[in-house]
Each structure stands twice: as C-alpha cells, then as structure tokens.
Amino acid sequence: MIASQFEYLQQFLKSRSGLVLSNEKQYLVESRLLPVARRHGLTSLSELVQAMQKPGATQIATDVVEAMTTNESFFFRDGTPFQLFRETMLPAMIKARADRRTIRIWCAAASTGQEPYSLAICLKEAAHKLAGMRVEIIATDLSSEVLDKARNGIYSQFEVQRGLPIQMLLKYFTQKGDLWQINADLRAMVQWRKLNLLESFAGLGTFDIVFCRNVLIYFDQPTKVDVLQRIARGIAPDGYLVLGAAETVVGLTDAFRPVPGLRGLYQTGQAGPSAATPRPRLSVAG
Image (cartoon, rainbow, N blue to C red):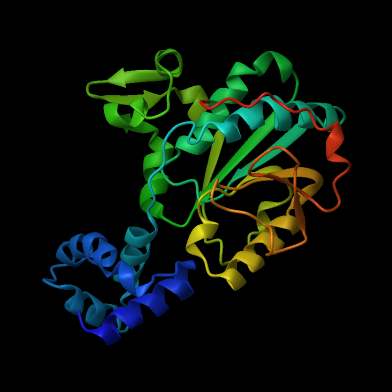
C-alpha cells in the first residue's frame, strides 16, 4: 500500500468515524483490513483502497469502518466505574427521580455488550432499591456486527472469565456447550441502536447517566469538544457522565466538571453541589 492510499484511509476513517490514525499505525491497518480485503475477494490493501474509491462501494466502506473501530470490551471493565454506579450514581438518581420514577442510561460505543450488560447486572442486584422504578438502558455503536453479537448476548469461556465473578456467571448466564448466553430477562433490559457519535444523537432524548468510555481517545481535539458539548445537551442537569480512565473533559469543555475525588465521573455545570453526592470507598477491583 503506497503512502497516498494510507493517507486516503486516514482521511476516510476520520470523516466517517472520527478515528485518528497516526502514520505509526499502519501495522494496525494491515492486521484489521487484510481480512476485509480477502472477504471481498481482493488480495491486497491496495486493491481494497481502489475498490473503496469506486462508485457504489457502500458495503466495502462499511466493512472497513467496522473493522477499524471494533474495540475489545469485557465485563465490569476497570471496576471503579461500576462501583461508582452502584454506590454513587444509582442512589443519587433513585432519590432525585422519586417522583418521575424513571432513570435513563446511555452506553455510547457499547461494542459487544459487556458494559451495558454489566450495568443490567448491577440493576438486578439492586432490584430491592428500585421497586416501582423504570430503568432504561440504551446501548449504541456504529458497528452492525458488534451490535448483532451484543443482542444475542453469547460469549466464549474466555470472554466471561474476563471481569465477571463466577457467582454472577452462574446466576445470570446459561451455558450452551462451550459458550455462555446472558439470560433473557437481562437481554430485555437493553435497547440496542446503531449510532455514529459524529452524527446527531438528539433523537435519543435526555439521559440521567451516560457512559462514554474509551472512545474519545480515538478522536482529535475538535471532535472531542464537539461530542462532549452535544452529550452535555442530552444529560439532565443533575446527571452524570462517565469517561474512561485515560480520558478527561479538562481543557476541552466547561460543560462538565469533575466530581471531586471520584475519578472519571463528571456532572454538568448546572449540577448542584457535589458535596451532596454519596461517595463510596473505592476499591481496586469491581
């Protein structure tokens, strides 16, 4: 693949998904796109790029974007965000939504579903506190392939061993040969929708809690600012935003402020004093 073709892929992926590829990532492009090329009967990345540039190459273009933006996920990833959900966000929302009786959660860039299903498990475990309340989980991703896997909720032994306590595996999953499927009642708790964060998501409505973890790191600064500002418009004034451990709003937008002492947790500038927010004793594992 010549330099001009790699530059074409860089520009294409930036415009279609926000993904910023440095010149040092050519190895990643080759490892992820060679299987796409072969699937379309092509023998090299050069042929793939040429095919993408032809009129009507919609499917190839879609496959390229999905291959490059598919990121790994695992249950209760990083631990702390889910502890914050159980011990800080959920109690605050139960109290604040006592009249409305509805809590809305958005998992942006939900990948193969481990994050929203981890939240669904947390909600099941807290069912006694949620009596009479309706909790909606909306999970979105731009990849149809990962959304299909997420809807089915079927995972390998390796996938369920990553972050999922054995007691939760046995309680909330059914074994199917060498695979495990999350139970139907938990699958029904999540609504799956295809969505590109570069496009408008105003139609999703307003949320009380937004998980947007480990996706901003792939965007350049103007794109991060744009996405964060649009998320801010879709969060309730007292709602929460959860980012990944390597992500921050600092230096990007004033629409959110960090919740003091709670890493990765943010509220909008309209939120009340964070001193009223319940604070958990954070542990290493979640």
